[in-house]
Image (cartoon, rainbow, N blue to C red; front, side, top):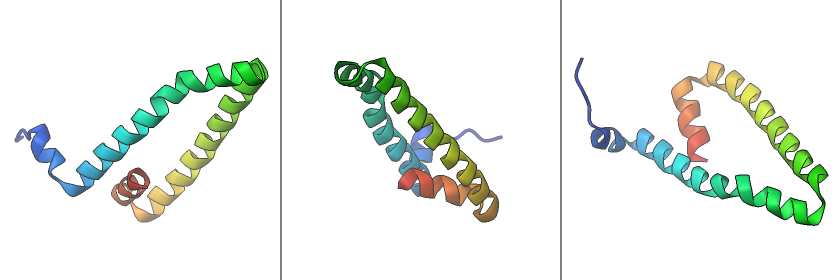
Length: 86
C-alpha cells in the first residue's frame, strides 16, 4: 500500500474543505465550552447551565439521526462534504 503525505491529502478540494471547516468550528466551539457556563452562572445559576447543555445535546441527537438518514440516501462522501462545508 502506498503512503500519502498529509500535504498531498490537503491539496484535495474535499479534504481541504473538511479540514478548514472543522478547524473553524473548533476555534469557535472550544472557548464556548468554558466561557458559556461562566456567563450563565453569573446570570441564572446552575439551572441555565444544565438547560443550555441539555438543549445542545438534544439538538446534536436530532441532527445525528437526520444525518444518518441523509447519508444512507445520498452517500457518505457527499454528506461529509456538505455538512462540513456549511
